[in-house]
Image (cartoon, rainbow, N blue to C red; front, side, top):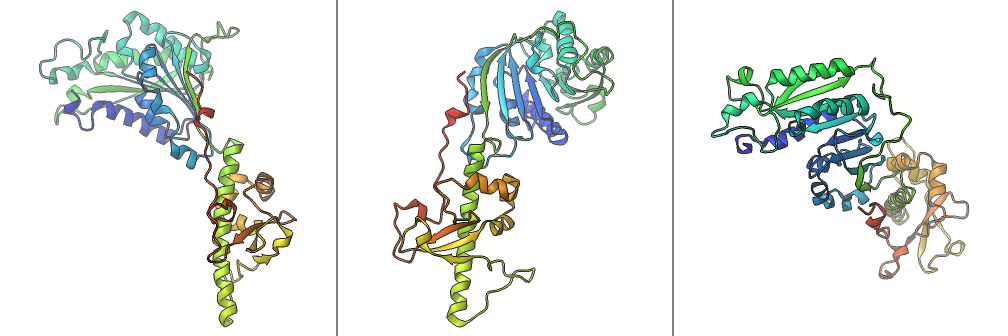
Length: 390
């Protein structure tokens, strides 16, 4: 059936969830019946999410493509400010587990039709009553669309236990809303042929359930609150690199600091040499003051530096004002000084008020001397720090 739709129905369902997340910015998201985690693999790039959980009964499917959920090289090179943790659990959607309660969003994409009809009542109690998320997105086949598929007999999939009409799905949904305090909106993906939209509806029907403000956020089922319910088995857990980790934050700060210190020094040196060659005054910045006025030569004897090289002192407050990223990452000039003071890649003056940059004269370059390079030493972070064995 997918060749009838461009993009495929599978992609359209996922895009619906992604668009919803872009609009609402949930921090805690769970995908029930996540299968091989294809939706989670897309959602992990939306880094406003802080906790991303997948639940499925089939452990083989969960483990099949977990390698695609591992952090990428770019995650280490450009870590975001907030931290994302992704967890996969083996478990049934008819079981209550405390670790999936109170989420901002729970998705059930093409899930309920795989449940026996007798389990739907328990599914509703667990998802809407016990887990009690702020929003639930449920997609399921629209059986009214099936006659448009040539040669189709029975259900769309051999494992489907039922397929509802729009009226049947909406009737079930409204009953759930009444019992558990939600409001539902109905839409779908996979448009019918022109002229048949109203008569047939979407190929996949979707219900978006919003928790009413008057409903208790922790759900309506409290009979076993005194107990700890952890029936799900943790299969995989990974925490992605972020600036919440002090080691990563320090590495990013130092890399940014060295980059800006080197660039400011290079600009200052060019202006200084031009001024002393033909007495041309150093140009002022847009505010009328020279932004290089506080940069100056410094004596190598005061530092543990190469005695034959020249050294320039670049004030930290100048770097702070020139680089917005330093402000964002460190929060204050005091924090910045504390984070970089004892790092071996950074040379500072005796007052810890300036970074000292070494300038090599032409022909003096030493390829083995990383400290005298214009560039920061590359940082290698072992990925085993970010994954648990699973």
